[in-house]
Length: 68
Picture 1 (tube, one colour):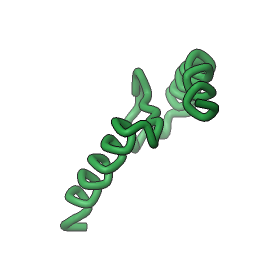
Picture 2 (tube, one colour):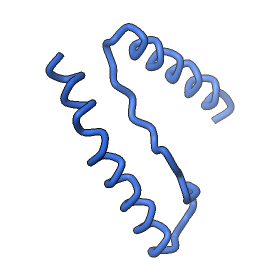
Picture 3 (cartoon, one colour):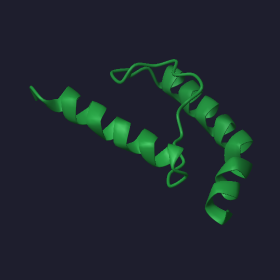
């Protein structure tokens, strides 16, 4: 646990490098209205809805990356 943040940051740097090289397509939420500890079903449902809508909007970019 003491080094978790170090490994996380190293992994993130590696992924971002792969994206710069065109070898990865990273997906981040445009908006994150909940924390990782959220248990309120309504808030979680809204967060899911936002993510699903973003996925629908971005699917053409994903297809372009995968088929390109």
